[in-house]
Length: 172
Ligand SMILES: [Fe+2]
Image (cartoon, rainbow, N blue to C red; front, side, top):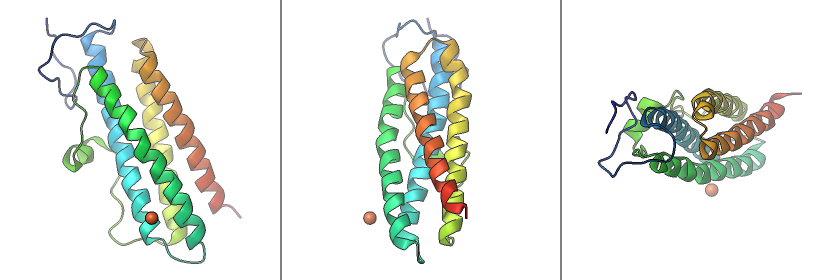
């Protein structure tokens, strides 16, 4: 008994019915929110890796190394987000076309910015993802979806902490 899918981007695969105690409409809304989180995390992952390659100036060593830690963390984070979308019964997006539709974050600039402009851009990106995770939390919480809440809580924690560390580099 399929209900209509309220989500535009979360695609329901042709698969056996699921009964995990969360109605399909709520699973669809959560999958849609997690898809946005996945797209934004992947986008910021790529921008951070880009900046790891292209950073210049006296802070090269510090930032080159710091960015590596950050992109590695995000690279590892996308897998549990995508697999949670699958466990909720939806396809996980995984293409640049889908990510660009889902993400509110812009691609990395074509010309690499100065080192501190990179830091500022990344700090804003981490704050934006923290806001997305916090927004998605409402529907996750009302659906009693603890595994998704756990993922969102961890993502908010890491993005807020990383944003702080990047902002600290911008202070005197
Ligand atoms: Fe490298």
